[in-house]
Length: 299
Image (cartoon, rainbow, N blue to C red; front, top):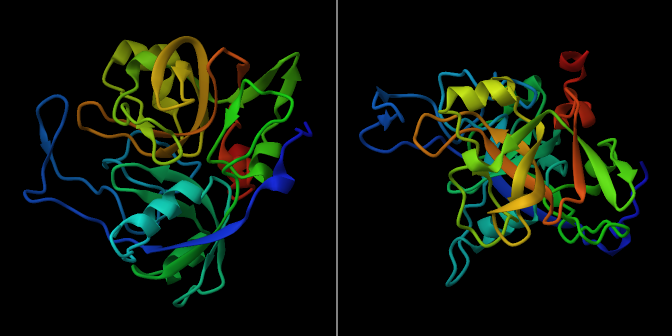
């Protein structure tokens, strides 16, 4: 579908981050929702064997981010975190990212998600690039997408997605609605960490997977990193709220978690408070498929 969008009015701007180190607290344990103590890899660093398209559930891990995590550690007078907030706000899923320092200089990848709390942006690169990257290497993102509008669908808000990726998602018009391919439908009632914000232009919120019946009913144990999913009865127009009939669409951006209230993270890419989005199940509805970065796993 050739969606009419205001692409000619959008500004493409550089933002930058450096490959961030994994971080841990002391003691290193996490307490699971069932009272166990575990020590697992978590946020930050370079994941050599976890990329978009891989399972989001089943790893011996907690909040692991696929590919490479970046963060802008620059200081800004009076607002030390302002450059990183700019990176996390302006970078959009599908944006081109380029390594600008180190042995992997010149390599091109794609933004795959944004993780709130730790405030990381995740970028996918081919395995040979991951081998050359080191913590501290700088990655430039051509941020493009915030301010995007669907000109024929005023009741649908779009955010956090590159227009190029949106055009590849096989969206179909249905009257004053659009049909969007998704791999899963998720009830808003099980959404957890990330609630309470008054916007959805940064970060994510988590799908809790502690209720076995709900997991089985909706097939949530088959979630993959990069999957496009529909959150049913969720309105993300001005934050994340439960609203009957609303639909929000997002991308799975990090793996499952063990802590209460947490689970695979979802970064919002569109929302309709009055149900103008129709989710249609499609197993290939994954950004790795649309960006053609791991075509073999979708055959």
